[in-house]
Amino acid sequence: MVLEQLGKPLTLRDRPEPKPSAGQLLVRVSCCAICRTDLHIVDGELSNPKLPLILGHQIVGRVEGPSRTGSFEIGDRVGVPWLGWTDGDCVYCRSSRENLCDNAKFTGYTIDGGYAEFAVADARFCFQVPDEYADVDLAPLLCAGMLGYRSYRKTGDAQRIGIYGFGNAAHLITQIAVYQKKDIYAFTRPGDKTTQQSARALGAVWAGGSDEMPPAKLDAAIIFAPVGALVPAALRTLAKGGIVVCGGIHMSDIPSFPYVDLWGERVICSVANLTRRDGEEFLEIARRARVKTHTETFPLEEANTALEKFRSGKLTGTAVLVISEF
Image (cartoon, rainbow, N blue to C red; front, side):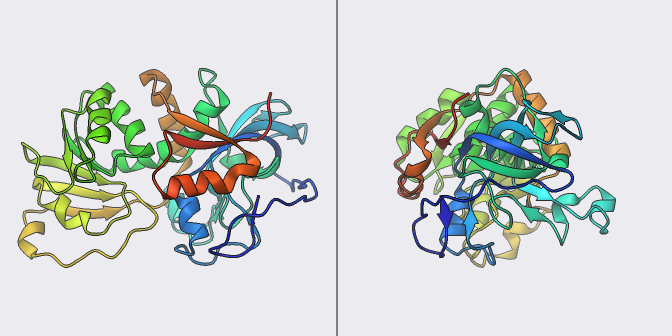
């Protein structure tokens, strides 16, 4: 399924099977989860995507070739994430900050992704994945989970953590936080009682609207919703020294707010991409915490339907395109 023009539906196309270059894997795609970033790309909210483009950066599949590349062999199950390549030599890469590499390439954005039967991926940036998960259940961990985990790591040793935007990433990270005995305060759209109840069922100690104040001052807040107005709202919930982590790749403009809301050594920071360390740590802790995903599956040719249901908030779980049956 190919994005040929921004703002337009994807088109089903036949293409030649991609050929891996040195250091790359040819992956037969089993399934690929859909991410909000895919919508940002389609809608032109992220600049300069490769066009035409095969979207998709939460890929689970099997190695088709070459016979031995890095730590992978033919038949191995792999996960392919958002970060697809870095130069390894810039100041960021050499200081363990490869997520900030100026020359980085991204799966399903600047290189073709997983809305297809086959994909090629740099073996260095592919993950060995836990046997405990079926392919469809595993796919959402590769972005919502991994980038959510990087956002969660930014909160440090915070005990009381607010989460704004209780979607896929929030559902996964809440399970990790509860496993680590943290207190989660869930903020949803005002009046969204169904999502608030879902948050409580996952172990949140409180759930309410984003227009409400929690019953206690928070040590940290993570914003997954792409809504800039939530930043000053989250600041007002923090105790002194607290941090607001903006966990998305795109956000609407942040409105002005009085300095007193920031004063007291409160901090606002963003999260950009992920490192391989983030991914490896998250998959290990997700296995130990028995993190569960909730999915809704679609055949590849219904990718436009899945994207539109995501856009309109009509999904019952993370949308996953099922491409090959193993």
